[in-house]
Length: 107
Image 1 (cartoon, one colour):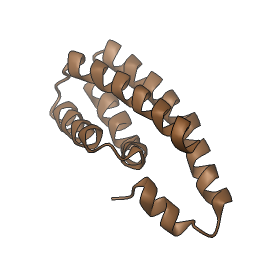
Image 2 (cartoon, rainbow, N blue to C red):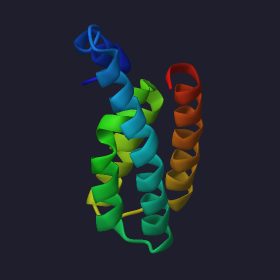
Image 3 (tube, one colour):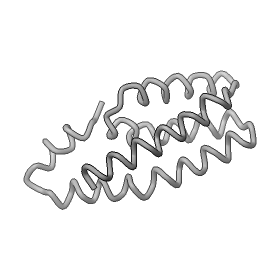
Image 4 (tube, one colour):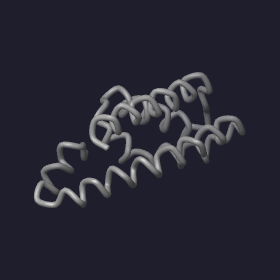
């Protein structure tokens, strides 16, 4: 699993690469969270599962093990055709907050 520390090691001689990866995540993750919110509102387990799969790397880069575990749990639940709307909504909020903190520190 990749983390911000892995990215730093890979790109320690290329700060531009690291900044590009952070900027890409800062732009794409909120968009995917908006889509996830829409999938939740439409009670669409398949779409929810796809988005949760797509955001896996970004969640890993944030480095919050609780979010990593929660994403996996919610993905598996959606894969089985079920949605826990309350947990999914809380997850979206937590990811947004963690991303904001991450960007304040590294962005």
